[in-house]
Image 1 (tube, rainbow, N blue to C red):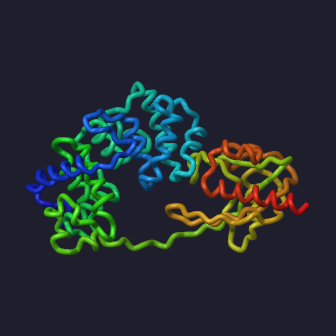
Image 2: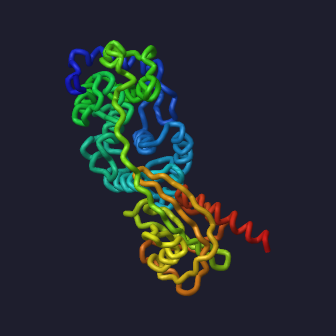
Image 3: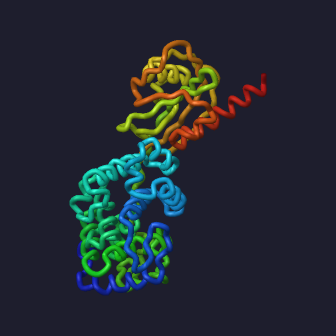
Length: 369
């Protein structure tokens, strides 16, 4: 049996049980409106963007700090991108923040500052995909819109005892669940069930309110559903980082918006060519990226970082500026920053670690003098 063929006659009873369980067991999360209270579409939208590929406990402090900085949609629309990325710093997947900012500006300009409740209008905004649209429309506006995320996929795979449910089948079941009373709570109920009861590897079936409808539970295959996906080898990038210093200031560059970590600040860097030394790579980064001639000196250290689809090793080396003035050939902007001012720049996690190694290396050098 596939997700698409779950008997329609079971849906009403399943929804009723799920809603009763959700009312009794829903977690108190900062972005959830209390029962019988109208949700704030801006907060719902923000939470869904932050929660993509990120754990709830990680998001909570970011959500609170974000609302202190940008309490309203208009406040966010009025903010420069640098401030937005700084507030997002450390949360990762920075394209989410860039797209959210662009979309909010469109809402402010074309929708009178109000999140559109029309599904088609909302889906037309930058960065709004099928899941985000379903979540915001159902939770914030009570629209009978479906959603599928990782938790939902696992729950549906067990309900239907399908080891590898296809996307169309998953969305078909989600669309069958959405119509009726409280579609937003039904969607949140399925996600909540997946997050707290129907968990990976060791589901808590004794606590499940809908186990009578679960084919995997009936057949004893719940721990095997869905079947693990075969992991693909992760490519590796070996990167030389040029830490260029002049008169006590460090040279930072801002990445183009269409690049990985676009809009974030960083030290100049280049992926090393085959057999290229770290020193040669760092000098090339300065020359090709900024039209500067530098001489690579002492190594500072190496930082390892894992992105979604690639692992990166950043080898930082201290560089002496020989000639030239920075020209951002491969970047959007550049700045000379004092070590004390680095906190004011939106730096990705790996770049902040490089800055920490740089400060430590500088202190060690001073102590040896």
